[in-house]
Amino acid sequence: MSTTGSPVPEDDHREASALGASSRPLHEAHDLAMLDLDGVVYVGGHAVAHAPESIAAAREAGTGIAFVTNNASRTPERVAAHLQDLGIDAGTEDVVSSAQAAAGVLRERFGAGARVVALGTTGLVEALRVAGLEPVGVEDDADALATGYSPDVPWKDLMRGAVRVRQGLPWVASNTDMTIPTPYGVAPGHGVLVDMLRRFTEVEPVVAGKPAPPLLEETVRRVGGSTPLMIGDRLDTDIDGGIAVGLPTLLVLTGVSGLDELVATPAGHRPTYVAPDLRGLLAAHPEVTVDGGSADCGGWTAVRDGGAVTVHGGGEPIAWWRAVLTVAWQHLDETGEAVGTDGLVPPAAD
Image (cartoon, rainbow, N blue to C red; front, side, top):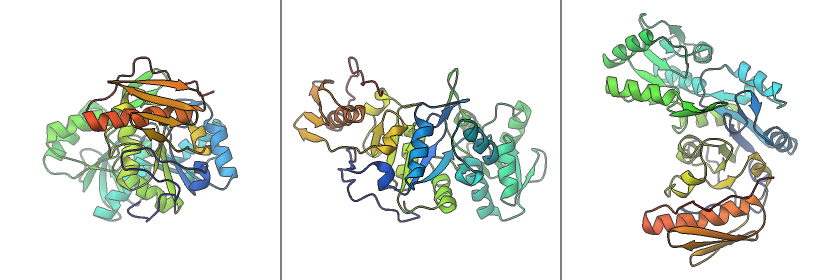
């Protein structure tokens, strides 16, 4: 990480465009696991399968755990209470949100006591107060404006805030997530609002959440760790965010990003590791052997066949993903086109 100097584990060697490998389980190779929440730990009011026991096992082994979320709508106290309701050990000190990161950016820029228009929920307002800033209304004198996800911000307040930003009021956005996972499907996220305001105001906000650096930098400052690992379900926020600050990353396939997105991911935006679920934190990630257009890993063989990939063999699901993605990325790097995914059926994680 550029601000912490945390190294990649010694056995995580790879070419820039390929997956990393670790002969040790990741929770042994890293002293801090930074977990995104939505789609990784829970979706709505339910824990993601295998998440609670995986987190508990990593803690038991001495790995630090931090819960990192772009969701600025809830306070750390509410997030920790929700995690505890799901059977996950968590304190408020373990939770770091994009609202807290936004408050840190604003305090650093404008100083303690700065007046900030807060267009968001209690999570954003409380983060500003804890940072020594003064949340104010949209019509009040202010030094800056902050926005965060909230389905309840009145349209009239958004209109007034947009006009003020267009007239020169500095703007910090908690995150730019275009979608959020919900129990009823993928829904519009705060990034949709940010995009609308950006186009109207012709102003580019300072962004605090992933993939921008402030949130992950804030997490390491608060929680500590010399070899952090960023874990998420989204390529465009969690993985790009970890890459932006020089951290190794683990993509779990329990949320937004899946096979179609992965095979089309260009070099420079690829995760270090991939796993079907959070049990990938407790697993080793074996080497892939490449021979021309084929890749072997843990009993699976993936072969490029024109613009498609065929797979045979058997073994752990992690190894299937590693073999398939190796040849898929090889094809993408050579041709500029993603392989087709028809007929590619990942093995059941259980």
